[in-house]
Image 1 (cartoon, chains in turn orange, blue):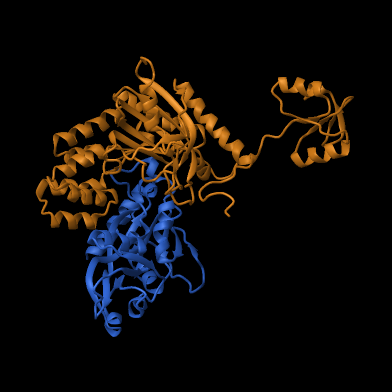
Image 2: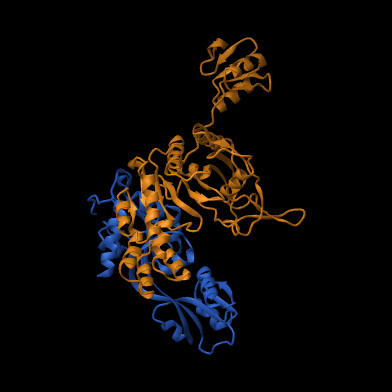
Length: 376
Length: 219
């Protein structure tokens, strides 16, 4: 029997303390921007139309209802909002919790059980709201140690509009979409040839795959905004871009994922020399307009590398009163479990604890000197 | 390597642009990959004949891996980009960019049967189970897929399977064994693939390199 399932892992103290710290650093940022915490059930009623329906872990409830382990937060947070009595919009919510994806391969930066911290800004659709989420995402990454992270913004509505301007069948458009998503120039050429897409439309579709870079790409995109829908999508991106400082934002108007889910801008953040996105999000509609993003904590840990050392205690104490006094001042103190001083000293050395507090004196273990308790 | 700033350069994309490439370790595909990369301006000295798996050069790091593993190294981001056959791209199901068709060896995915065809195809043997399942589904064929690791022809000859799906180059091995190429499923070639984050963060360098590869592939 396997000890634990694929794509799950044990978190020993050093790793778990680190994960907790990252989580609270992110929550601190979100708290500062006015986001309130919520939680949703880990067990959800299985819904075949859910975006992750095929990918989730399923269980059977006692009455035979099929349940699914929570695979993402956005849907259920939006449902939660609908149950609030007369909220004043926009509503700002944040969440932290475990997610499960059955079908994912366990590999570098990817687990089947992982922890997500995220935020949703619901009930508003303005460029300012989009920009808020983008700033927030970047500030979260700064807070946990990614000062060089860059956010890349796209708009699936733009790709969709340009592809629909070909007036091809949905199955043909789906193949073009895949080629655009993979920036597969030769396949895109082949398909356009086969479908006899000509002229301006052909040029527009071909140029989709090269529309990545800094804010300058928005000007290029304007040249191929061949329909009103494409112009509208591009205008949305421009309105948001106008609110952002250019240094840390990139654009790709050829992003073609989530065409049927996202209703506005979409983004991912990258950091140099790490090949996976650190966070992602975008604008969607879940009964009400909303924009949000989320961060996977274990992915952050993989990108950051080494776990920081555990915080050591300042002392081991045989005196409860002395220890309580230090704890009240915010110090970390370990209670003695024996009166055998040699044993306590050995443990203190192993843990890197600098002081030993005995009933009558306090010893600095590095040189054996007696010090005043008040000096700790 | 041309490092002249393009219209889209920024500080973001200028940093750390040394490239890590995953290329196939097999002699023939390795030779093609190295030749193509060098022609496009990548400075790769002669690889010393050794059992090294990784080669560090000033401008580039090369990882020599098995063909099916190239898309994996690129997808998780251990490599920025790679050179690999379309067959292994399909089989991997990995979400990489695939910007350049490098040409090279022309070959194809085919459905192959005995010359004396079985009335029904119920089992199909292959080195490419994922790609084969997709083909069978598109063809509307309800057959089981039997994953094997090589010498696939033998599966059809011995009756282990009723047909095989494999890559075909000249078709000579098939003929010699009394097999026929019943249907060409897809024309294949060698591709340049790129990690999604790398294309954006090393945009300036990769965009130039992709254009150089494209120009050479056309000529």
